[in-house]
Image (cartoon, rainbow, N blue to C red; front, side, top):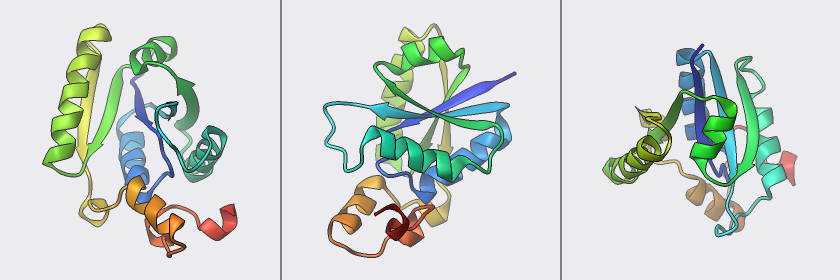
Amino acid sequence: MKKAVIPGTYDPITNGHMNLIHRAADMFDEVIVAVVYNAAKNNMFSLEERKAFAEEACSKYPNVRVEAFEGLLVDFVKKENIDVVVRGVRNARDFDYEYELAQIYFMTGDGLETVFLPSNGANAHVSSTMVRELIKHNKPCDEFIPFTMEEKQ
């Protein structure tokens, strides 16, 4: 049984994330969407809200579960017996950053492998940062997220 993790802050979860989760769910027996708590980040939504948004968005996938965690990904991976880290890349800048992380995961995670999935064209421009800016300025963003903000406010 191959188990994968897709870590992220998911602040908030976007349609780009959902595309990645959908594709990973087709590739792996179990996928864990790991909502990361990082005190150094100034998140718009609390950890509980981000986890709840992700659980709602992922509820249609029977082999996907959502977990929140704090600390190092390699420790979470060991605890959950995960085989692979899945990371999405939208552009060369993303790839360079993710490649460096993959090397660290491999070295500190007993050979933990990372699989890169390129974003699909429709979501290549979507980021949580962009969505947060739209929300902050009361602009419509429902086409970029798997729920409506009116439901959440």
